[in-house]
Length: 322
Image 1 (cartoon, rainbow, N blue to C red):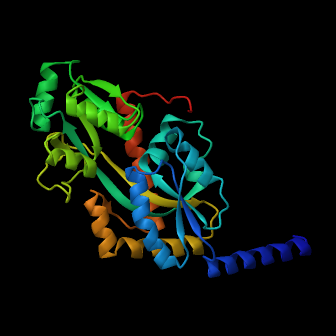
Image 2 (cartoon, helix red, strand yellow; image 1 turned 180 degrees about the vertical axis):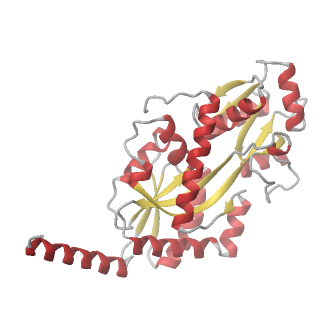
Image 3 (cartoon, rainbow, N blue to C red; image 1 turned 60 degrees about the vertical axis):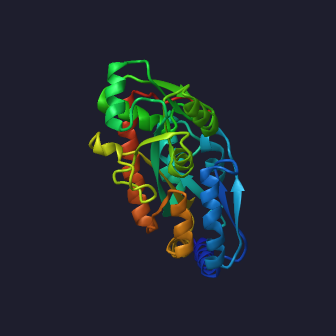
């Protein structure tokens, strides 16, 4: 190696090490791939102030919604790998979209490095109150007696709640009809009215409607009962092996120095172990799940395989990018 190039490499490495040692020295942004006000945005805004406290620099939420999370994810993937742009990653954006949209403008494995998981979000299967079924077992019996006549809502083709219900169909052989919506709010309203029969969505909002009597809870999609509603059985209690949860995690561009990733991981883990934040997240139906970067990477690999099986079981083919 020419002497000048060697000196340049040594100086560059020393400069990167010094920058990592002093990190952070300015505000940090977290790119949230959905618009303000939704569950993803709410969770990010609960976590951000505690990261600010632990890192000593303001952590700002930057909402970049669009194309089912693709717009914001690409922005984060193309950001400088200096620890000042983080991605608030979701199961839809990082494990489902890449399998349904093979020509995305980023590659999750190549372009991102995990900092930590944040939360696991068990999903609640709710029904129109007038539906003559109180359990998943009764719902399956009803669906088998009326093939093609019962329908279910989702927030769009390829969305997690679409795939979760299609996985249930594949595992049980029932014939129910998919009705896609452009958002959770209109879907919930139509389930309340009986226009559609069932819907899978996040526990916090759905529990509010269940308690008011506007919806009926059938089961949670997690492998074990949710601490937020331990009285509600799991789908797996009627359909062994079924599991449908979503999750959030924090990621950085893959070339980010390991020292910075470690510093961010430390802040995330300390934040999620705070009783106040733990209580706030659990109050939303989320289960805090701090991990090491290595544990998060292992989890991501398992999630990719699980959703690959679900997509194959449902017969969904990869679709054109939005």
